[in-house]
Amino acid sequence: MLMASRPFTKTLRSLVRHGARKSLVSLPFDSSLWQTLVLDLLPFDANTAIRGFLNGQFPQADDYGKIGWHAPAKRGVLPIENFHVSKNLRRLVNQDKFEVRIDTAFEEVIRNCSNRQETWLNESIIKVYRELNARGIAHSIEVWQAEKLVGGLYGVAFGGYFQGESQFSLISNGSKVALVQTLRLLKAHGFQLHDTQHISAHLEKFGGFEMQREEFNARLIEAVVNGASFPEPGLLDNTQLEW
Image (cartoon, rainbow, N blue to C red; front, side, top):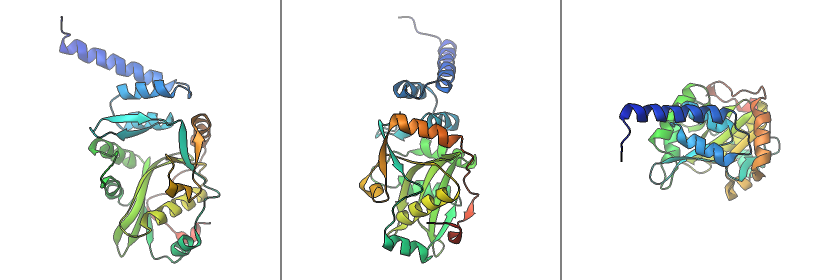
């Protein structure tokens, strides 16, 4: 069997990737399987990640380190206007025992999120998200106590759309405080859609629910073109956030 030369193989691969990029931009939102196939052909970098997010997809690494794209038929969503918070948790947040900061320790947050027995994060994903953070697309919400990072979460934002990726906690309620403050922050800045990818019993306590992919994609488009913007890095002023 004849083997293709390296230059030819490289050219062919380049053409396939170019075609994949062109196809992805014009794909209809109801072709999730085709979107996934196209994304899998592209190199996993910041630009591919942006295309994936804007097409309702998110990346995860499997146990072998292969990064795949996902668009569940049912998507986890948290309400922004009417999220649920227990009285005890609300009291804890109002006591100001913690300092909440934005984008001051992004890499530390994402590495804490990956520091667990089972994770979909690997070095390739962390590298891409670090670049997205540098571009002002990926963000961390951090919970600090006595100048130590004790909890937090990270996600990506486009217009009025925020996709929460993962969270961690080194003390009791650390991640819950981060989630509550994120919801209040999104509400204060006019965000329309808080995507959690999947739903869990933990998220259901905050009012989380599942949304059909078709409705989610329509809501995604509306939110992305919304004029909302994520706040600048620094200390989050709790007194400026409503419940």
